[in-house]
Image (spheres, rainbow, N blue to C red):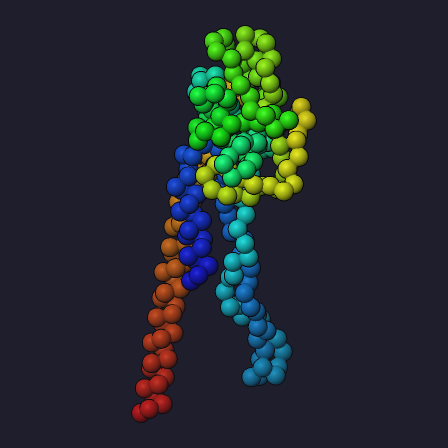
Length: 232
């Protein structure tokens, strides 16, 4: 039952983030908890098969498939057209990574996420947008205003770990070179959660839970009948 609870928690979290920008869905790996070899003749004869003790939660992992790109016509929005890629942001707790490209400007005219974390260039500095002019962002993250280059968004890839919200941490992230990723201006990346598939998984889980309940109830009834026979 504990495995079912974790699976349900994962599915529910995925569904809750089906419309979250650039969200990456999670999945659980299962493994057989314990297997016993069944033998004929009271355990002394030929093997007749294995009896499993049910699945065990082997761990949760994130699926990094890219979500669909949704046009917004907002020049400050960017979306990754590739599964690879995340930009580095500065937070009060340090530097982290994100793929949520719904961007804006803070009071210092630094390019930031909607949550207010400034995007950083390869030198670790925020990208400041001058007043006025038309902003453009290329596939490689080069930022220009009125065709004058003012900075470049640094893009990284590595082993990312979710830390909450749209932020990730990594001890292995390295900067990607041009051509290893693609950014689209005027788009945002949607969640890669398929709500229909998650609902189907939830239905399957509920049916499996019901079957387990009926099986446990049947075992209880059989044990009760056996005790009555022994007592009678």
